[in-house]
Image (cartoon, rainbow, N blue to C red; front, top):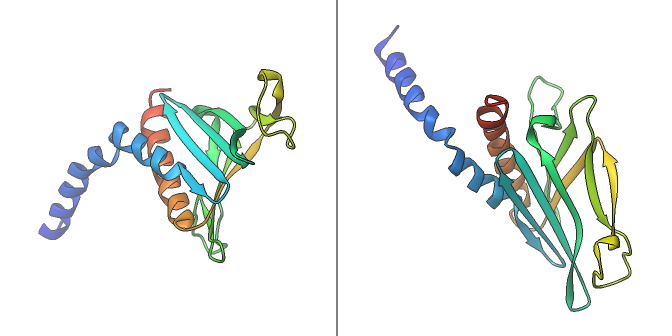
Length: 172
């Protein structure tokens, strides 16, 4: 082995724990999962191996909780947007007006997750828990639009996969 390769190998081993630092990855997941553009707000939180997403939509002067998900990261993978030439990406970006970034969560075979959605889309406020209904789903998209949306989708997918592999699946 040439000296340059040995040094690169040792540096990569030393850097690996920093890349897999759970607190750093959680911050990256939450920061890149959070997004605000025009009349929508999206927040992402990580608690152990549960990923929580909340999406609010502005109706009149009020912000209404539109959808929410509590996802078990052990039962979830990101959709692979392959380029057809052997490359892979777990996010998709569409430049335009506005830019759009997409990450799709897919439940592992034999599992579904619950997607809580606002029942009455014409109302501007929630009166009770019955204002939501639950759908069982095998896939759902996290879609952001506006400045930084594509970069956030890319950062989210990398941090999510590292955290899931090193802290959820490894710990089982």
